Image (tube, rainbow, N blue to C red; front, side, top):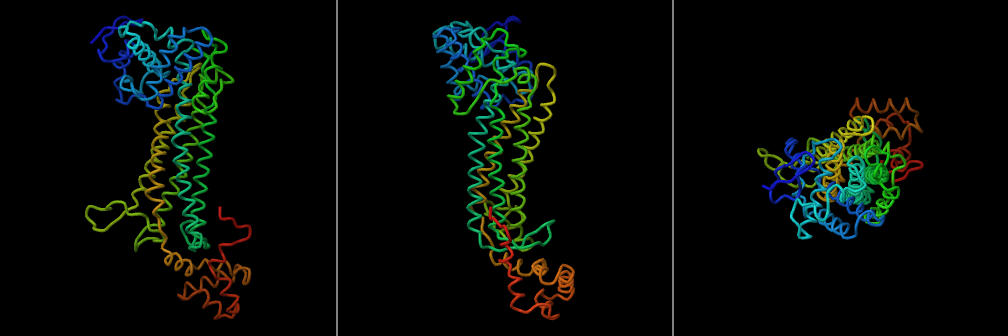
Length: 465
């Protein structure tokens, strides 16, 4: 152990740790979950520190040699090289001050190493006066939150949803002429094609992509520049604009200084909005997964219209059983995601006066949601959707025998007489055609044309999606 010093006095720190006294205090104070802050959040915080150093150098507030060292170490952290030196638990001070301090200390101590100075000497870079120059945890942590979540949404979740949408759209094309019976209230309804059904799933995935884009846009305003309470004390008026420009250039996403620093630090409404989009996406994916396992249920006792890929044995006791395990995986991930997004909604209510003190938990919940949804969507698309096959004969048989085909007879017989035909057919175990012909209600040619299932899938104004 070595001894480092902060404003509260001396503190023992492991010899090989790049963090300092204040971080060591936080490790001692918060032995809660054993989960450190998400790595994507740490990457984004490092990017913010680098951009702040660049801005402070441009503004003449930070010497070029100090700026260079800060940016060099921040790049190492953003590349994932130093994550072992960020041990502070997610459940810590609600402003995230412990993690901000952890970042400041690691950058300063690593800079000392690079400059040939002792760790803990704060030479040539001081964690507060240099690394944290013009910043407060109260504005830099919300900034890192917005930056990191926006990057994860755009760089991880969006591509996974695009992959899923393409696989669903490909199946919609493959199944375009496979006629099947529709179901509403889980009861027989009018026929449609399996391609039309899958076009609906593809459209849900397309809307999920749009929701991801809207979530990114919701995060473009950054709190940086407000310092402690939103007034900007000890900051430079042009500092935030320089940092936002630098971050936009580095990431390819657009970021700008918040229109109101008091809102940006006191409230986390933008994060709640993002949580809403993610909860909706999880709901969409759940709908798709549940539908597919229903349509693939069987092989004899279920609907049996689809054959889902058999990716592993389904039972330790029943030989030959295969279960819709990837659908079940996705449903569980979505349940987990919606629970995490509800945590963010609750965190959004916890802003008191000039600060919302739940930032670490929001960061954990949003990054975990994005991570799990993205991985699940990609695995589901490749492992399940891509290998789905249709039981064309089963689909055609169920469609041909459904009493709901009588809907096509209402223009010829009227609603009540068509309903009577359905009732008689079911009571006498005859087909609709047999009942209609027995009562001479229509001639055979017109009847066969009306009852042709494929014709019913092409209604007025029809679009495949």
